[in-house]
Image (cartoon, rainbow, N blue to C red; front, side, top):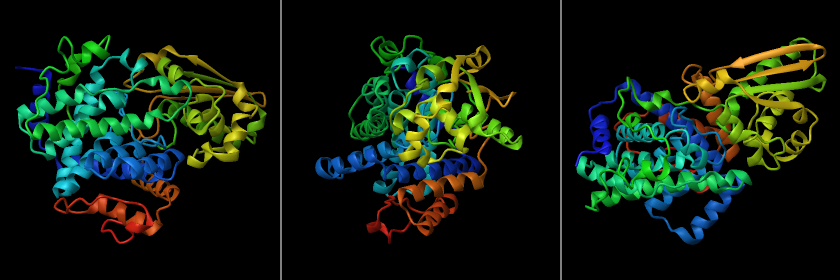
Length: 444
């Protein structure tokens, strides 16, 4: 039976990644490992680790679930704009642990990850805008990314690949309701997507069948979860790999806040150069796209997580303190910023220009009135977007900062970064651990 999934298999297997494609995947793998390392030391990370040690065992699916969930906690993982997904936290854990179990080399890990990104992002682009209002695309499209990466490593032919994707799709889930009260469910989305996709591929390798038309069928994914799907997006021509279209986040907050943070940092620099203090700011007008308002308009965040999903908090933080690191969303500074006079002066509105450009471009504009003067900054490509990428130095600074937050010694972090970026493709993948008991492991 012909299906979109079969076409996707042929697209994936008609390409041979170039060295530069795999090198690009290395940089995203490094960024992901930093996110994982930081997630280990969070409150949610401790809960997940305790649960895993008490109840979940050490099978590969559970290891992938835990790693994926931990990778998504600090809101520092990458973002593909067109699909509105975070591919790294889903794809890399499945590829990494399966490579380790199968004794596969780094080159296979990189190619499998390219396949995973491709499937996840293409299907994420196809779900349509209405899907994202209820469903978390990283969760729903993510199962396909994990399944595609695992299918490559398991050497699945077209038939078993279709089964794997079919059984991954029937497990797709992840609702936005958690954002209403800033609870921890979001991390489960990444964990479930990674583990469910892996399970579907492992079962397909044993001959466990799945629906061929899981995407377009009358009772399939699009029919059930997508009021306005764009099925052609799954198989549309593309010049390169979707991984190269993905953004790396410099700030530990929802990506919808990043254009506004960039604009705020630019204005902060300008007002400082004019001898104006942040406490002289009289008003802040923020212009952005509708989805950013729907997801991140929160003038009264009451927790670390809520602050990361608050445009008002992120803008106030950037204007008052500059570049926002992980610690800026915690402790006393969190309390002070939540209760600051500045956060109450920030007004949000939807801007037609930014809204029409979304999701291809995520933009925001800020106008600040201070000391009798007006300062304005508009951003159409946030820092970390492919049009405005992090430099290698900035990427490494982010990685080392995340690892330091997670408690990994600098020298071990340096060795891990060196291995990911420079190791021969023939070297076997090892499974990273960041606690003291792993001090002698090869990679760290």
